[in-house]
Length: 221
Image (cartoon, rainbow, N blue to C red; front, top):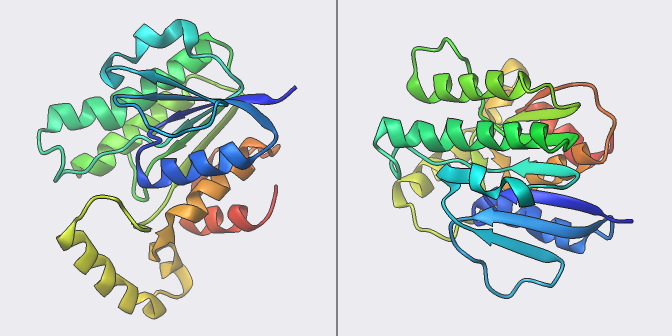
């Protein structure tokens, strides 16, 4: 029998790439998407549940499967209100982890961020760190937290400032050597492949930094 995968954030850069990979992967018979809007043109193996992601608990009865891939995330520019920001970047991943625990889903994989730290003075890092703590406290058997650096890739939406920043950052990549390697740009494709590989591994490690994510993407654990 094939597996059932759940994706949150399938309309985002990394989530959309992961969705494509899961559709092609014969190990998965069903892919469940939970999002606020429907994605058109998907094959029959994809089931879509559309609604308010801030009220994810309403999907409890259908939030069932073998693996959860949480690719949810926003930015300060898109969500300047800190209360709303936390509801998204903290609330949705934590709620999905709790639902996973309640529904006995054994594998939970979530994208966090480099620098995540619950006691950080930086709001963004603190929010991610608090999310990680809460997710780990659910004690889901196979919990994997990815902490990528700046994520590169072709986004559907236009972010001029971000594109300029990424272009400059790419130019100075050769300077990041030794301990600075963890600050190098990591492609969304690499993150998506690492998530898929982790879901089909027996790794006992729970938190993965950017360099480790790159290693996982090119080999099975």
